[in-house]
Image (tube, rainbow over all chains, first blue to last red; front, top):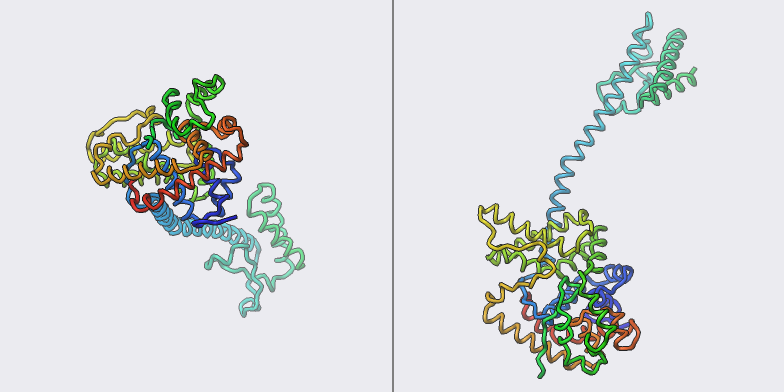
Amino acid sequence: MSEVNGMDERLKETLSAMMDDEADELSVRRLLAHSDPEALRSHWHRWQQIRSLMHDEVPQVLPGDMAQKVRASIQGSLAASAEVASESSLPERGWRLLRWRGSAAATVALALLLGFGAGVGWQVSPVAEHGGELAVHADAAPLVADVPEIPLQGLDDQQWEHLSRYLLEHAQHNSVAAGRGSVGYARVVSVSSASR
Amino acid sequence: MTPIKRQSQLQSSGHSANPVQRAQVGAPYLANSGYKGPAGNAAMVAETDRLNKPAPDSQTDIQLVRKVRRGDTAAFDLLVIKYQSRVASIISRFVYDSQDVLDLTQETFVKAYRAIDRFRGDSAFYTWLYRIAVNTAKNFLESRSRRPQGSVDVADAEQFDEGERLRDRASPEQLLQREQLAAALQVALESLPEELRSALLLREYEGLSYEDIARILDCPIGTVRSRIFRARDAVDRHLAPLLDEQGGVI
């Protein structure tokens, strides 16, 4: 198969058939995929010009490559809009995600605090005060710096029982309510059960 | 040298032509092709009358639009090249400044690209493009607080005589270039082997499908397809230096 001016003969024949609305979809796809774009445009342009000439159509004077200008304009506007989108939407999405996770973490932390508050005579153990404590975090808790960590090591039996019952109740309640927070509670419950 | 009559328009380009005119056009070159024209073949009259019905949307346009929707910019390039001259001509009916015409032509295609997903195919792609061009030109004039300088009906889109008004505005140099090209075209057509010339002219001047041409020339459709391509390629080789030299004149 010979190749002249950047396009092989078979592809040029397809292009010719396209001029006459006689090319099938597969051939068009192959043409667009395998042709040198510049050669393709050049042939198509000249053949359109020849057709105009054959039909004595009075041409419009179009200096330069209109297709190239249009393409540049489209690419320029697409790039500009993509830039604007990346500047606005990504931080927006990030903030939304952060807000949601923050809310979830705050809810979990508040629930835990209330739970501890319900206990009588709970004290932070000396072990906890000296570090090395095991902190329970909600899934998204690390994203929020100001959520207080709850030390669980050093709890006595009564405190563990109280906490477990409390978390179990909340897990049951949330599973009925089908809230997203129920997953977190369930995990905490399973962790607390296993640790006992 | 026998002059070439170039009066008919291709159905696929959205133009219709009088059947008698179409029968006359290209006749000198079709004398040996076995094609006797509509009057000489009753079956062919029915066939050619069929061509007078409103043209369906160009299959090629539909294929290209589909590719553009999938993000193929090369396909859109082909649509731009195919219609750029006609779009510029439409806009020049409203706007006289040549730089404005160019800018608005470009804007029309950019708008078309952005709206391509909204092209439902209810009308021909060219008709849809025509509406965008007219609206772009009108909006331009309104933005300058000027009334449209010309008026066109969307219904004219299919029968639009391309750039008629520009005929009077062509410079002497452009007119000379055009005459040179026409003469070169004539030489190129005359130098084609008979079977190639017949196939090309039946397609270009009569607007016949490959199937109809195959029936007339009594050969397979694939042969018709090949002959038309080879004829086109030969004419292209002959005219390419002139066309390249004259840039965007046509």
